[in-house]
Image 1 (cartoon, rainbow, N blue to C red):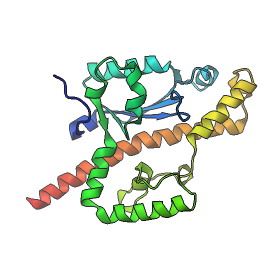
Image 2 (image 1 turned 180 degrees about the horizontal axis):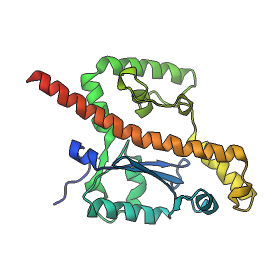
Image 3 (image 1 turned 180 degrees about the vertical axis):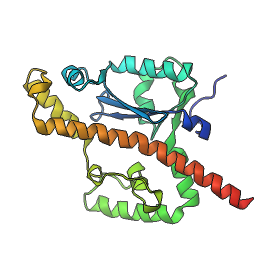
Image 4 (image 1 turned 135 degrees about the vertical axis):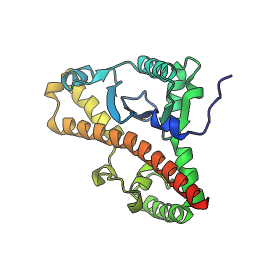
Amino acid sequence: MAPSYPRSLTRDEARRAIWLDFEGGINKVPSLAGVLVEGRYSAIILHPDFGSLAKNRKLVQQTFENFVGDTLSTASQEERVIAAWSEHELNQMEEFDDGILKACYRNANKLVLNFFIKKRPKTMKKLRKQNKKDKAEGKRRNSNVGLKDLLGLDYIKYVYPSRFKSFKPAKTISRMEDQLARHGGNYRKVATGAKRAFTQLIRYNEHDCRGMAYMVDYVFSRQLKENKIKH
């Protein structure tokens, strides 16, 4: 019997994982999927009204159902896991699961946060304290330690653009929806600002995918180094 979710992510799985991150409005089907496989990133348009955008920007467009089916098929045929930063992607894909999703899904968040809680408690305490302060000041919605908090640590040495710290993906997507609706779906007539914001959305998503993979590799490398020191 195939193992069910949740299951620990191994280093070998991580090296060949399908790193996945969705962007979309709250309680809506994703508008964009970011996929990273062995260092190669792809942005896939899932929004049904973004056909002109996809064509003009030479991006692949799929229905969400077809995207899920293709991703699961790839994971099965190529023996890869699907890794994301929470259970959000899992929950959204479940409707179109053909029976293998839970067996191949991995929550990278669990691996990384478990490591920091156990091995870097001072870092976690500092981040939580800062996040609570920022939440009280209205700078963030919650005080949970997230991927961007960890990527921003000096000793992690990941270059995360500061402009993305306050970036709002849902607002960017809504802006593009309004522009396309106003111009009859014609992307060429969309305001330059909306086009630029969507470009930033793709870059933002790419950093989410690459950042996940980077943090997981960091954890595995530190665990390996610490185990060698012990022995």
